[in-house]
Image (tube, rainbow, N blue to C red; front, side, top):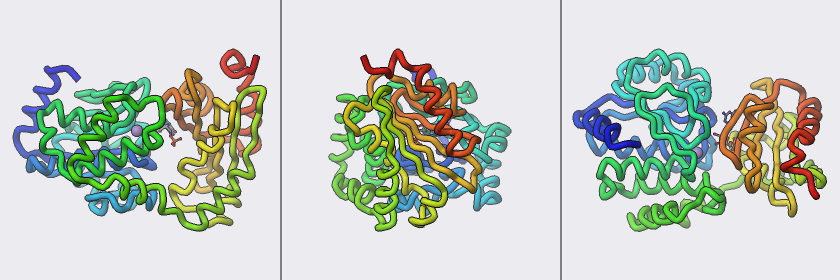
Length: 339
Ligand code: 5GP
Ligand code: MN
């Protein structure tokens, strides 16, 4: 973000404003962490700030400071519309196109509030008045830290802000292991820990809060794992019936795709999850190295994301989606085929 944009935002924020902060639909740790952190920060400056999520998020995020004040558009539309109507500024965090906020798209597009995007996804749309977009960043939470720093307020980062930012950086970097984790990411994490937050407690809250049924569903997913060694590819499927058997709850399948990617020699992994409610197959893609799953998601599955982590959907049946997926692999033989 250039100096000019920062000074414009500074003057915009110099008097109390009505501010709405929006994460993407099906928000993850980075989306909830970054929006809550920014909300806490803005409240320190006496703004009226509220996070409005398009829909609900997993239980393992429901300990985060300020989480219980998040409004959900799908179940609290009237309250949300009132806040959006009153807003002077709308921050959109952790997504690159308004299509990513589902049913909120029209009301946000129509709003005349100043829009500020903070995001690290590839190929962002040009809808915001101010855009802080950087695909090299590990997470939107890392960018919110930088944003607060650019506004000259790092010393205002308290435990509430720090634990939200820590959560998003941790979840989006796979606990600091993905290649997007830079030395700067670690420096920021150091500063967050210095505020006095308990980092090990955050790891426990996120990773050690599994239900027995989720572990059984993981067992089912792993037994459905298929490996295609000649294309260094592995994939997992879950049918709606399997999800029902293990009493699936939002977030239960988070991270499952990484088990496919963890098979030795695999550089391209996918999970296909049937959703009768949404009438789609939800797809998560992961890769190692230079192979771009953002490209695969955009080209074939109406989605997008990052080079090594992307998502999309299919309107075909699960069986047809898998056939399509296997049929695509030869298009990428230069990148995927062994020898
Ligand atoms: P996940 O597979 O964990 O749901 O998402 C991986 C990455 O891809 C995230 O950065 C997420 O925002 C992005 N992503 C997931 N699903 C979609 C989608 O349907 N469309 C787009 N454009 N991005 C997606
Ligand atoms: Mn993110």
